[in-house]
Image (spheres, rainbow, N blue to C red):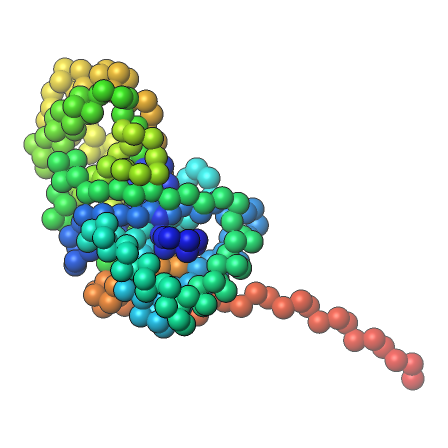
Length: 286
């Protein structure tokens, strides 16, 4: 996890379910860092990230972040840091410049750098008008996230917002049981990039997706749904979904999240790498 002027970041669009700033309210601002881990170095990377989190806990670093490992697409790890404002990053950065945190992070970062093939970061702001039932957001109980990255063609933002209103209206009419948080990327990605995070407490949620979509289509009416889908090609340059898994051992969550589900969030000691097998004892003559 790079510590240059950030502590966490993300990928093309979205990720995390742990987007809460207070309790389970969506954070106004997110900084997201995505790290691409070298082939065969995932276990070592996880141990280093656990050391990062332990360092932040020990020094009581004021910011917090959640780690998400990709279960689809490239083998990336996304780190999401929720913030109450952009200005908060100045306070967080000042804390990282103080000892003993500064030296501790420099030491861990040198180890982490050997395990990364690449890294990138973005900043995004919360869009309540692109969210569905945000009041149901429960950061402590989120285990998986479907992160949707939508890149809107230049000049088509109004079309996107109008379509989203119709789409989520269908969700509401069909009483779809889901929670989607919408964010707009403001730095680190092409203009017109939006992130939609769907939070899940279990992979079982995905098994019910076909039934939910049928219910939504019926609620909207097939003609309205088809018209909306046909217009998507004119509105979007690309749409991509990434399935992510919450990784508590690599995360540094706030205490209220830990207290809400300590069995999941309290870090467990990382397994030590297996030592080389002992050489067979040399037989001696009688």
